[in-house]
Image (cartoon, rainbow, N blue to C red; front, side):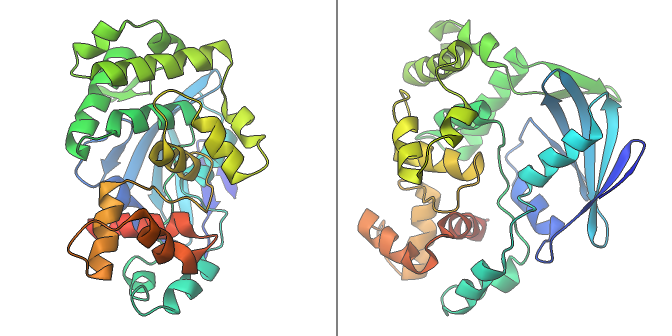
Length: 296
């Protein structure tokens, strides 16, 4: 990794394709927490008390990370990008598994270099899961934008507001009715405010979750949170803690992709999904991501 004032060159792994990662980020859902500009992505970052706006773009075998606004520490910014793009993971073992099975082998070519695009902020990941429960993605992103633009802070650059996800302290102080006015269901409003209050009180944190010894212990701890079931727990562990053995049971997109590959005319059962993923033990999260990619 090389630094030059406001720019860093971040080495990328052998199996990496920025265009595939950008495609996953830019699926037409109007995300309000980053901006796609041509072949680059702009991302506002708040790390501790520092905040800034970075621009990430590809070079031949590196990613160029530019600090274009704010006073954010560039080393911390590159660490965030490394986690966001899951750059430390060696994907060759996963690709070898794909190539061993005819029904999956095409993925290693068609989606070559796609990475598990994370949500490093656990609070954001939990809230996003609650927002997306039992509604289509288009409406979920609309609700997310309303929440962020009403209660998140922003950094202004070239007359454009770049938003940060609302802080737990802000959402913890809300009333249920304030979210109901933005078309959140009463239950979702209660869940989000409840999660925020747990974070404010220190009852829950990413560090506490990471301290659990096993995946099952992490799932169990997450499910103590009101509004968190199997789907949310697995999504959060996959996207925020980068656990590799997660399957988003109950996810309609996953069910659709599995049904298509299995040539079913119905939704697969949980048992069928478990058997479907068995050959990819230890890489379930990546297969999950590649199946989602199949839908777009």
